[in-house]
Amino acid sequence: MELYGITQELVQSLEALFERAASVTVAAHSHPDGDALGSVSGLVSYLRERRGKDAVAVLPDSPASTVSFIVPNSVPLLCFDTDPEACLERIAESDLVVLLDANGFSRTEGLQEAFEASPVPKVLIDHHVGPDRNRFQVVFSTEDVSSASELLYYILLRLKGIDGDAHNLPIDAANALLTGMTTDTNNFANSVYPATFEMASQLLDAGVERDEILSRLYNNYRENRVRVMGYLQSEAMRITPEGLAYIIATRDILDRFGVNEGETEGLVNIPLSIDRVRMSILLKQDKGHFRVSIRSKKKTSAREAAEKYFNGGGHENASGGKLWYPGDIDTPEDAAAYLEKVSREFLK
Ligand SMILES: [Mn+2]
Image 1 (cartoon, rainbow, N blue to C red):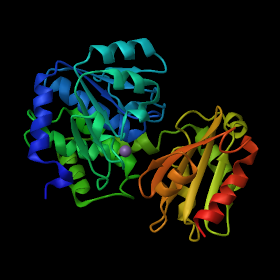
Image 2: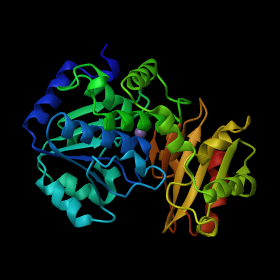
Image 3: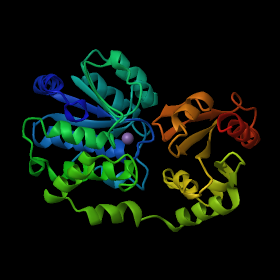
Image 4: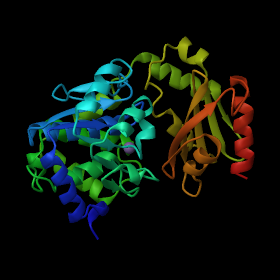
């Protein structure tokens, strides 16, 4: 068995596409997290530094300030929220598109139409369920890997210019890939495979500064973030008799603490540390909907809950979605009752 399904045939098809392409657009999902930014940066850096390609990262949203450091200065980045025209122009001009850390273009929101209209070959490198295979010429997809960053790492090792040795990666790519894997595994706490440690080991040997990465990821928050996390845990968290912990972060609370995009990252994991909690749900109020994050312990499927109740999906124990109002519920005030119902039905 080839590691993570990276067959020689797939590698050759990808190699052929890279060989022919002059300008490559590399994209990921909306509200990009560390893995999205790490994998996109890693690939753009490789294509520019080792293949001499005009490669550019194009994202639906600008990175949150907590993770924006992952994109190095050497990686050109266009964001649809701040510069829609440049993004669309870039997509129209490129002759190859690579989508990372997303199972299809629907996850690129505002950019979806442009990607789907583009006639050029497309490549998917992802670790979510249900890859939209029909849209892509080459698909690397497995759920049994820590992150898109790790999957990409093992693909890059097989490509020209790297030749199986992590020392041949541009240092910017090496740093970005280790960072992406670190965030998606919650610093080696979940979805870790033997090859995940091997990747980390090889990248450390190749000169990645892990201490620096950890300090930028975990010791670099604003005070507001720590205070709102404490408040939401002590005042807003509810636990149902069936073992659902939920937190509703209303606009009012988020504004009161001056919370920025990305600053509640990680909060949804915390209630899972309580013995009787089987699933944890965080609702964050947005315009007309709540953004939903779900985590579950083994034997409870966060993915199923996301699909069934929150217009979403994801991994078995880590998923997300949206709760619309009006629509799924009439008003934002009905969210708690909806979650209580989900608990009774889904965890009975
Ligand atoms: Mn990911």
